[in-house]
Image 1 (cartoon, rainbow, N blue to C red):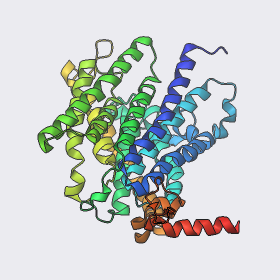
Image 2 (image 1 turned 180 degrees about the horizontal axis):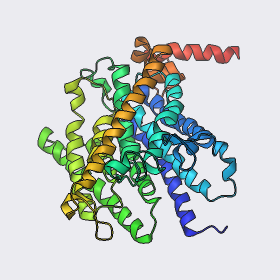
Image 3 (image 1 turned 120 degrees about the vertical axis):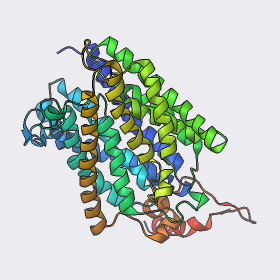
Image 4 (image 1 turned 180 degrees about the vertical axis):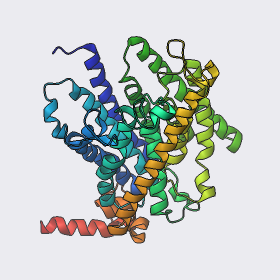
Length: 435
């Protein structure tokens, strides 16, 4: 079989989406405290390793169509290890799908930054991808419950989710909220100024990498050049408008726009356009971005009012803007061949109903399953690090590393480590000497 332009396009897009997870590591890493940045970045990187292996072994089979179990998920053994796909172009699509699973579970980590056990997170990732992500992906994209032929979709109508409004962002947002509630607040939450982002340039770099990769995220499944062009423009327009809306909201509310707000606005717009990228006009994408930017900018402050410590605003950005993009299709979806479409195009309430049902089903399913998984881990090995380890910093206690050396030169000209690191440095030096 010859390698066609379509094959190359999907392989390039898969590489772009894979780059998004290291980009997320920079985005999240910059938003954490200096003593937790490496742990935060490691949570993204280990998600690549764990989810990648799960996807090859059984995840792709569970999310795909064909042989399935009661219409709930694909048979894990159908393409176990992908050996049956060798020699087939389906391997390209399987690789593309793997990158979606990876970024989705990595997104969740931002809700429990600075206080989660690394081992507990490493256990959570493969279980959640297996029991939550893969089934939901099957329901929406693999012919399962929410598809046109599925039990729910055939009754409520098929929801539009071109690139992952429900499967990725609502999914990750609800899971992040549940884990944040289980694990509890950081020490000094809402009071400690040391919990503010430590490296805004990292945040800006991460947002730039995410935006770059998102063109592959949204565009990889484009079926025609015309559709790809619309997706590209919409993936430019929505985050651009959302960034402007976010910093304008900050200007009105706080008196000044911020770099963190600009970066967060870009991500909010990208999230909102994800389900709608192939089904709205460029003007509709701008309107969608404006709404998402304002609502997410307002939503990130709710954690202080309601008392849940969503450390890096997974709920405020991914859940809220994911809902905005998913539900907005009920209003602004373009008609297909002159028929259907959203309310604003005379399509009636059918599409809005389908979008609403899909969003509700995703939230309920993910919420319940994540609660079960999270509580099981929390009650056995524990999700949260010790209080002293949180004060010292999870980088040192979990990885025996620091992103930055905060010591200085003593009176004799020798390096004097920061008091918080000296004990761990002595331990490491002793171990190295014994080795």
